[in-house]
Length: 237
Figure 1 (spheres, rainbow, N blue to C red):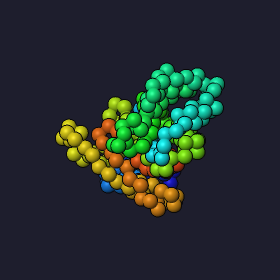
Figure 2 (figure 1 turned 180 degrees about the horizontal axis):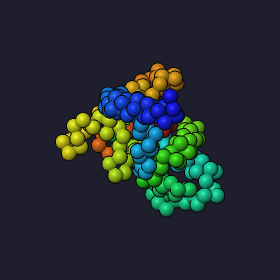
Figure 3 (figure 1 turned 30 degrees about the vertical axis):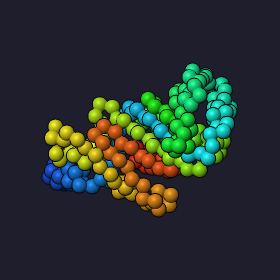
Figure 4 (figure 1 turned 45 degrees about the horizontal axis):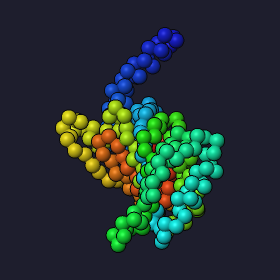
C-alpha cells in the first residue's frame, strides 16, 4: 500500500468519526457541568468582571475598633496612597492601593443596634489573570482586620458581576431555553457539583453559590472559604 493510500484511508476514518465526536461533544456540553466548565476554562469565556465584597463584624462594644482598623490599613498600605477622605462619627471611607472601603456601624441606633461594624469594597475590576491575586490580597486583609478588632461573629459576601452577559453559570443553566425566554433567573447549587471534593473545608460544609443572570454570589463566615470557593468556581483550581 502506497503512502498516498495510507493518507487517504486515514482521512476517510477521520471524516467518518467527526460527526460522532461532534455529537458526543454536544451531548457532554449540554449534560455534563464538569465538561461544560472545562470548555469554558479552555476558551476563557469570561475575561472582565466587577467584584464587590461586603463584611459584617459583630462586636461587644465599638470601643477603638476604628483606630485598630486604621492601624492595619496604615501598616499594610503606608506606601500605597493610603487616605481617609470621609471621617464621620459612625461612617468613614478609606482609599488604599486600588481599593475604596466604606466602613460604618450601627452602635448609634440605641436599643435596636445589632452592634455590627459593616465594611464594603466595591467596583473592583478583576480579570481572569489577576483574580487569584485579588482573592489572596483580600483574604490577607480581612484576616489582619479580624485579628485587630476581634469580632465575635463574622459574615462575608462576594459578588462577581460578569460583563457583556458572559456569566458561564447562567449559560450552563439556561442554554437549552435561550436567554430571550428568561426574564428572571436565580438558583442555588453546591460548589461540590462542579469541583472535586478535595478540600475538607469546602466539601465538609457543602458551600453553595447563588447565581443570577449577570452575577454570582458567595457567602460564608470565613473569607478563607470565600477565597477557596471562588478559586474553584471561577478559576477551576
